[in-house]
Length: 597
Image (cartoon, rainbow, N blue to C red; front, top):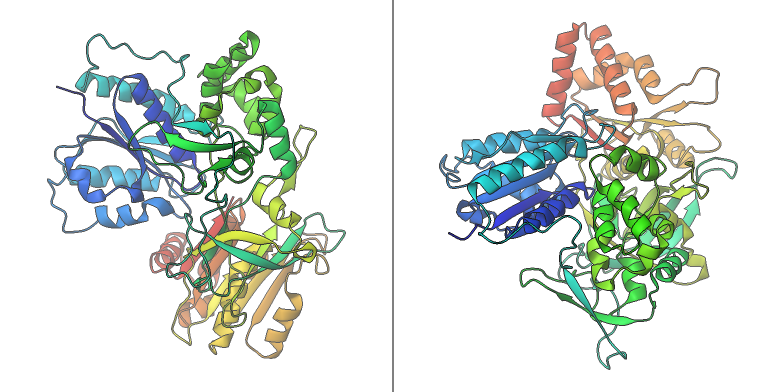
């Protein structure tokens, strides 16, 4: 009997689940197992009934939600009309990736595991619960679980006799070959696949809209520690439409200096053209790369050289290294025992792929170009809350961007790829175009005209609420209550004059919290408690909706705690009843959050 094809399906938001899935694919190939690795929503889910062996790798996002690239699958697998024997021929295992600081830790993986059992599937192992909060990250749970998984799989499907496992130090074949061209072809031009104005289909990740940037304005005071930008794009003719709560995805690029340094360290000619050819028949070339493509385009727009490398990067780099000392160190970093040292070298100081390659110059100079796409992940799009309404700014889209920059023990400051790239663009110096597309966000606002909304948005968390307030005021909805928090009235009070104008027109009630303007720090949760009777009146008697957006660190828990105390003090509820009241608000979508790390 030939071994069955192993299928690995992933739902990934930030790339970790995809990285783990690709690791599974590599480990399967080393064990001579055929293996396909696919995003859940790109797999025809009706074919699951014919799959004998499936590993699901899924992250949990936000408030226990599935990642964007498994939402269609999620809807299908929970259909009530699926028979309880639908998957009775399937052996499966579920690997979850989550964060135990969230209430719904690995909720998606646990729920999927239960559902697959209900549909007749046989679980090879209990669900794996990878935890971001562990000092060694998800690998602390994933490594032992994978050892058990391969024992089970190879027990059921032993490899053909005479075919030994490919040892860890030997590199697997690359996914692609780069066919270098001696001269530029006469036809075809290099550039991204883009959605053109007037196009029938709305822009998407595979076909973004190249939006002209109209303005890029710093909105924090000159002495403020944080550079925050209000950026406006022209989307006329793009086919893009959006409502309050939706998000825009932006595809950033690497800086020219980083591209030049990378090419130097690897000995690449930035102007060299190549065609990309997949080695396997079921692998397609990335849609974002033109054919032919130049090395400069590949490094500028595709390879995420400014990201912090994962362990898989060190595993492959060790395989490719011909330098004894460097190879020894790379093998140590990629071993289970070397994870603490790797964390100290790489994760804690946020060392980038480019910086690691500079630290291992002999290895970097010998990397075969065919392995570039196996070694370095693709740049992922970044999501921003849309901060404007089409009812007020037709054919325009605005975002509020905090430029990420911080210091670690490394000399060079750490910079967010997308925010730094956006901040560097100056439409005053000539035309600037940015690849973008829009998708629904996790916030949805009530359509009933007289339902009040309470919005809590400290810092840049206020962005989606500006869109909501603009939209609601334009539709004549006046029950808008905004709790806004910042440090200083004269430094980071975004849209102050706009809010004041709306207050004069009695379309908005603004409750600001300036944390540094008095000895005791005052945050949005303090203002909520101060106005507890108003909050209770709006929620309990007027059916208000409550929204929260901003940094995920401690603010959401502080706001939930403030609400619990309001329910007890103003509503006279005991602690368990207050918790049940809050849970009911969440279940009925009257309490919605959008937070980011």
